[in-house]
Length: 170
Image 1 (cartoon, rainbow, N blue to C red):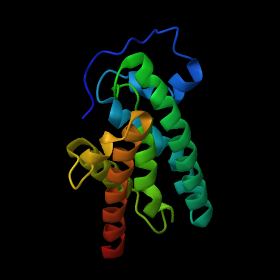
Image 2: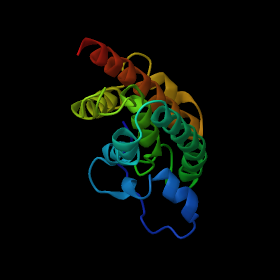
Image 3: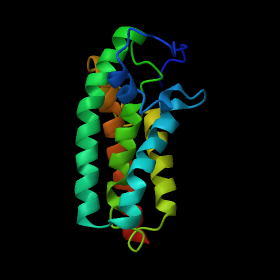
């Protein structure tokens, strides 16, 4: 779990673009559970694909978003550590990426995956991200933004696998 050290919200030295990316467009500055807010940003970004563009186009767009936010998020999170210290709580883009990964099995849209599985994917992802079982904690050992991103990616893979199992059972 990330440290609860207060983050200076007005740090003029921190460039705005990496700050926006690292904080998932400012969600990391929300006062309670910034990681969950970061995950909700992932759902909000993904929801139009689920509703209006299901199937392979949604899957491709989701993978594209994952790659974009993973690459820029790792870069921005590394920069955030220079200003805010190791694994700052406001840097929640890793949760956004993780949530997008955990939603991949649901890219078939509402006719294939019921809406309540979105909530299940959020709950599973946050469970794995917070408690870090099954080797997830070891991923934090990577330096800088790599470690911040890697543990959430593994947590999301576990969550996505369980969502896929649920999909097969319903």
